[in-house]
Length: 211
Length: 333
Image (cartoon, rainbow over all chains, first blue to last red; front, side, top):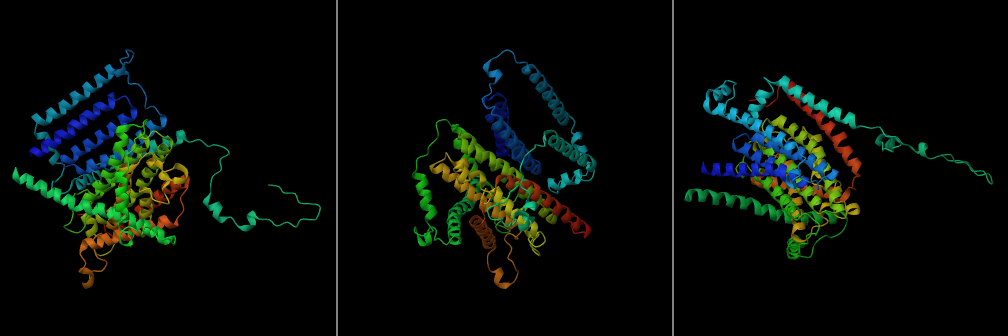
């Protein structure tokens, strides 16, 4: 048990430290790397409480795909040398009060949830009535809940993601003129008679070649 | 306290027992790769150092260790040094869940295949970090190419894994192997095996998909600025990843440690040897492909991943699930 808590504190300290570094580091690429470190330590925490499926999905989705796209955009846009206004001490930034307000709100919400859990233990009991038994793996449990009771919500969220994806493609898609594309089918189905024409050239008259 | 130490030493001993053979076999596999490549091209390949040139990779490793590590002045030093370490660590860390037989497995976790998938999707960071931190044009272009390539081909690998999981009903690698006792998944899912093999080539940046390090265009891609031991670490990580992909393929489709026929002379061979034999078979296929196939163009690579492999594996997923559903073969417990 003591080893467990040592590991918990290591991971949570890394998580909090890297979350702070995401906001204060001067180099945007460093921020993204700290974000990745944060995701990884959070997924380690998930695995430690026994939610290994969520931990792995967190790694695959956030670290393996989302953060790669962040990194991609940050590198391509070359915004890495952007100055951090808080550190350079400029007065004209008004993000800080709003940010503080939002983080205070989230903090109090978390306190209310955790407090409810602590002082009303029967809240925990209501989870057992949902038919989750602890003998199967949590992948099975999530599947059982997600694909039976909440199948409509699950499919609806999938549709929303699909609509967002199609919308993003439609908004950025431009049909450009004069682009030469390779068509595999056209290329393979081309025959000799499409490309070669034999002409009998008359002497001293030549032949007119039109393209 | 003493008991805890004992457990700790026991674990360290087990990890070393796995890690050292993996590292040695990575060195041997480089020799095999060059040898196969040479034989296809009617050359001899490395044959001077040791019997059949077996110690060539060890000699190369010694050379790399004694070379000076050059760190470019304008590079981002911390990330520059971190990149090869990340690559190699991620390549080795995933070996923890590979089951060599029913009992020889370091970590028998419930989400084994997801763990493998997650770690292999993290592999792109070593390349991006190396390419960005070098602060030079060729490595940067190589890193960007590789990021796009690995993210695209992971999608189809994920769908292929789902295909296999539908037939198994568990994410545990041991269960996946044991589900193939009667029939290896290569027989019902043969098209998926082919796509998995090609996607694995793309995922590990092997020819014909080695655009991140295409020497004709990008010098050496993301590794251009690396030298000495740091280059060797990239190289070790790359080959460990290739071996890992081979073992993933043999666990998902070729029945892992199971012998092809369960009768007398075959059952004498210990189970881990079967897995190693299958990994070697897949690896020889990998190096044959390297020798005989020309490099893809970049737009063709992207087209292949998104417009051919992804729709095809999705259609096959629908086919598999409807077949299993119709004949009531779904592994529901």
